Length: 240
Image 1 (cartoon, rainbow, N blue to C red):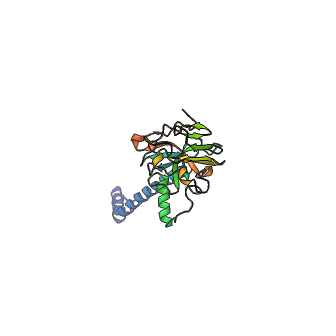
Image 2 (image 1 turned 90 degrees about the horizontal axis):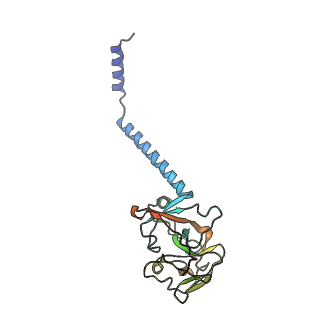
């Protein structure tokens, strides 16, 4: 029978002859970190795809409500349960079939995936076909510019648009359109720096956006910290 001293010597020899490989230990730690990061990214992408998507604001077309660099939180469930975009809602939509008539080249699949993943978590600019604007008119509305005081009218009611960028007129472009059912008339809050429905009056749809192309409603600003807060849906039917 082996003595305690012999057992201790045998164990010591096993440790010397079978040392733990530091490289393997580092690789195991790296693999765990990569797996954790992949799991986190997968969860973020799932949430972004079906619930709330961060969206990086790339331009000043919605200032002062939204500023360049803001990360807004887009509620993708807002219009999923029998609800439709309403006047005054700030929405993100896919501009194909309205603002974008021809699709550009997608580039390589890898580049496309990286861009989509980055945009989905608010780290990269959104797709070139994605826009954020305020809903001014919904299906069946008559929207025109302007009344004697320079205000936009919806169904004959002048709008009191206190969200407009300082110094901007409601519109420098006259228009008079009846919004088709299932479509929206949208405009930026920075009217002098927004390519919105007015810029696409001559396109198919007359500048209106299909409701089914709406990605979601902008409910809040998540970043930067000093900009935290909700994005108010100002009822565009209000008038003064």
